[in-house]
Every structure is written in structure tokens, then in C-alpha cells.
Length: 518
Image (cartoon, rainbow, N blue to C red; front, top):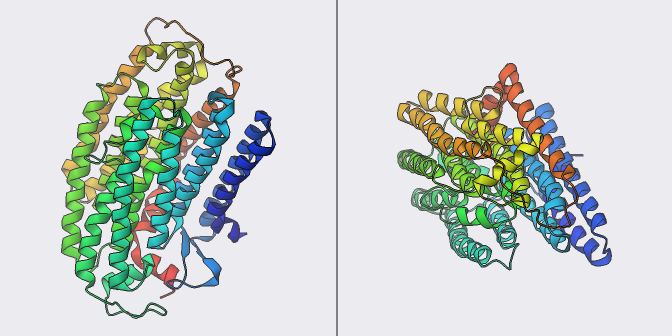
């Protein structure tokens, strides 16, 4: 059954085509909705199987076409990639279910099809061990993101946000392709494990790719600078954040929740995989890499602090989530910049915690937006819906990261510990300071929800009841609490996060051995 894991991105693309064809031949919206939810649930089941396989049997290396790397493309499904793949498909399932309630019937199929394509690209990005395949996956995600951002194409602001994102991302991803060409021309391979080996020992000879072709030091320095810039753009780290607030403000609610759990975590993961696994400790340009990681730490810290300050000035939940996400992604990048297993583990866990927290806030506030509007004053409407209101509170507390029953507490605890152990006490202080600054905006929103109930003006006669969004929110609450409790009571779960997830990225020798067999 291992082939199912490797085929997951292809299955997701087929699911996208299936939904579109079904809409063409079957005009009943309820049938399309049911099939989309079923297919997204099936993709989640594959991710659960992938995660369980890694827990049971260890890292899975899938060789496409039977060609061994570096001759062929390989997928590496390890602790880190399986966790983020699970997060992406979980977000997909919830967004499809929520979309079946909140989106207009005539255009739901387009959302479903594009969401499947986006997650296909994300899963491929997380799994791949090939640089060119990494670029192709990022392009698929970006194109899908443009479509979802401009979903409400009658709105000028949505078109502007999508156009800004599309033009800037196209340029940035062209730079990623350029760095791929540079590395291929020097190393003679696109295999990430092969490059990892030769960046540490340029005299190595590998079957099918041979030895290096050029000056790997100069090529690596140029490519590393480009890659770092691309990855901070993909996760909207300042100063490359300019596209994200507009996207989060104009895209549909389920699309924004999906972005924060899949597409927008790619930059932090890509930085971890390329700057820690492939070009990690022990390279022949170690001093340059150390300077670059220090620079990334400064950029991430500055971005986290500035965006945390801006959270408290926002007047809508969407904007609060946007600047909060920039702050949280920046904190995760700080963990990656330490280059330690603890730092990387804290980064991945923080991406998971932020994805769950953002979804809780967005889906809860989405109920109020449908009935009233997007202003903070409309959050008072949620007091009539206990599940949604409790989820809103839990979501903000999880993002704040002070309650040990929630995963947000543990991700920030691991990040703080990583900073201390890496000899970065100012970084540890920054994690705590950013949490406090963001909390001002969070509690501002919660305070608005306690004001007299705002007059509701129900919008859209196609929404029947609130059973579907309530069920989605209840599942999110259950998963968030379950993860927090497991982290609180289980040493093995915490050990898996630090040793398993962190080690799968930081242990470059293991990565090379598993992929190349050397």
C-alpha cells in the first residue's frame, strides 16, 4: 500500500478533475458537495495512513518509475513532511465542508477543484526530494492560490489582491527556477540528497550523476541567497509580506483557512529543508551559511515584532489573522534559523498550532460575517452560538500560547527553549514579547464580542441552518484540545516532536543515507 502514499498528489489532481466533470454532467449541487466532501475525506485518510506508516515503520522513500535517485525523482515521507501533509489535507477536508455551506451553489465546484489542486502541490512540495519538482509544486500551489484569491471576481479588491500576488509570486518563483539551474550546472544533479552529500564533500562520486561539474562554493552561495529570499516571500515574512493582508481580506473564508494550514507554511518548511537538511552544518561554505542564518534570524525577529504591533490596529478579524499569521510564521522561521533539531521541531509544531488556531478564529467569525458583517462589532453575534463562541475564544488563546492545554503553548515553549540552547537569549525574549503584543489584538477582538449584540442582517437564502459550520468548528475544537492534552501528558509525543520531527530535518546524514543508500 506504500504506492498510495506516493500517489497522493496525483490522486488529488484526479479528484480535482472529477469534481469539475461531475459538475458538468450532474446539475444537482448536493451531489457535487457530497462527492467533494467524500474525496477530501479520502485524501485525509491517505495522510493519516502516511503518518501512521512513518510512526510504525520509519521514513518511506518512494522512487518514481523504479529509477533510483539521483536518476529519478523520489519522495521522502518522514516525520516532518508527513505531519505537514496531514495538516494540509485536514485543512482541505474542513474547508470543503465549510465551503459547501458558505459559498454560492453555482460556484462551489470551482472552489473544490482549485482547493484539491492547491493541496496536491503542497503535499508534493512537502514530500519531494528533487529541486525541480520542488519548483513545479510551488508553481501549482501559486496558480491555485491566485484563483482562490480572485474567487469573488466581481469585487475589484479581490482582483487587485490576486493580481498583486500573481505578479510578485511569478517573479519570485522565476528566481527559484534560476537557483535550480545554477545548482544543476554546478553539482550536475537535482537530487536534494545528492546535493547535500556533495556540498559537504565535493569529491564524492555518485552513480548516474558522477562528481561535481563546477565551482560549488560560488554557485551555492548565490543560490542560498536566492532561496532564502524566495522562502521568506512564500511565508510572507517582512519585507515580503505585502501580498498577504490583501489575500486574506478578499479570499473566501474556507480558502483563507486552507492557506494558513497549507500554502503559506511552505516557505518556512522550504527554508528548513533546504537550509538545514540540504545545505546544513558541515558544508564547505559553512561560514557563509552561518552568516545567512544569522541574517534570517534578524529578519524573522524584526518581522515578528513589527507584525505583532500591527495586529492591535486592525478592525476586522481577517486583518487580525493576516498580521497574526505573519508574526507566527516569523516566529517559526526564527526556530529554523537556529539550525538545531529543537528549533526546527518548534517551527513545525508552531505551523500546526497556528493553522489550527487561525481556522478556529476564521470559521467562528465566518458565522458572524454571514449574519452581520466582518467588523469586530459583529463578533457579539456569536454569543448566540455557544460552540462557535467557545471556538473563537480557544482559537485566540491558542494563538496567544499561554494555556498548557493548547498546542500553541507547547510550540512557543519549544521555540523559546531552542533559542536558549542555541545561545540566543534575545530570540527567546522576542518569542515572549511577540506573544504579548499579539495578545493585545486578540483581546481587543474578544472584548468586542462582549458588547451588546449587533443587529444581524442574514445574507444569502442558500444557507440552511448552521449545522455544517458548527460540525466543522466542533471537529476543530476537538482536534486542537486533543493535541494540546497529548503534548501535556505524554513524554513520547513531546519526544516525537523534538527527536522525530526535528531530527528528520536536522539529521542530514540520515537523509542522504535513506535517499541515496550511501
